Image 1: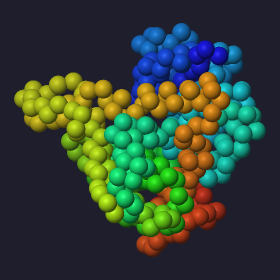
Image 2: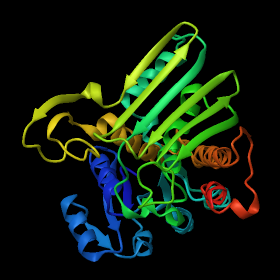
Image 3: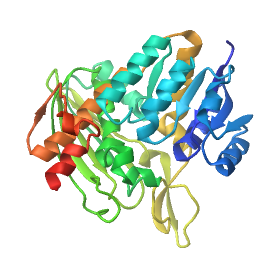
Amino acid sequence: MEKVGVGIIGSQFVSSIHAEAFAQVPHARLVAVASPNEAHVREFAGKHQIPRWFTDYRALLDLSEVDLVVLGVPNWLHCQVTVDAARAGKHVICEKPLCLNLREADTMIATCKEQGVKLMYAEELCFAPKYVRLKQLVDEGALGKVYLLKQAEKHDGPHSPWFWDVTQSGGGVTMDMGCHAFEFFRWILGRPRALDVYAQMDTYVWKERTRGDDDATIIVNFEGQATGVAEESWAKKGGMDDRAEVYGSAGVSYADLLRGNSLHTYSETGYGYAVEKAGSTRGWSFTMFEESWNYGFPQEMAAFAACVLNDTPPPVSGEDGRAVLEIIFAAYASAALGKKIALPYTPPPEYAQRPIDIWLASRD
């Protein structure tokens, strides 16, 4: 295999990022895309110069030239599409969060192992250049013993309508973006065991649009006396904030993923898309460039394609995605019950289908 043949399943926002990222990976080639809307998937294929397109992803899975598929579909579809891809002999990159529940996570992991394919968990923060440098500082001891980490991701809401429907997404902002922080903490610390979770969340701004939480603060304690504090919001105006702080016995480091890599712009008229999730670009704004690279998407896809090409373990795996999902379940349970939740955590059977279910029940 000289190049890894890639199939994209999905054709909306994140799939555009996947296509743009793989276009920068010399050891991969885009073979096909599948999405149910014929007009949209045809346009998507033409825009990204993808030779073949389908409205049924199973037809894409039949292509022998596809070695690897990347999933950009709603959360509730992750498990079934992964299982179908694995049984077709395709390696899988699954966008975050891994799936809706722990039973699905176990099914995905087991099926990929049985079929001898790799299940890779797409957490781009583990590849974002600033955060990679931050981890290097931690690993070389520049900050001493790390005792506190913070990660914040805030904007004014998701791109697609299905995110707002908790039956499809499995939760609100904690599910959508808390997953970033939890894997970030695990990765920076060398993936120690999480000990317990305490969370506060509510729906402050989007009550008419969703039953899910739109702002959350979650505290995760890890082995080795390190604490992670996640701040997540769908309620924050003015575009995306994505920041991290790491405190150690010998130093501290702050990383602003976007603002240090942007133009500080004033415009009376406003301008086209250049500030992710900003409601308006009139007045002062932070104009991004090379946003995908700053987030680490090309680096992420290059690393995963190399795993397939060289038959090496993925740097972020399905098991990592499951560990994150368990923390998400514990966070919703903590917010519902008003207390710290110890890990490992198994949700009660009546609340095991989606992380948010126990929190919603506490509010009814």
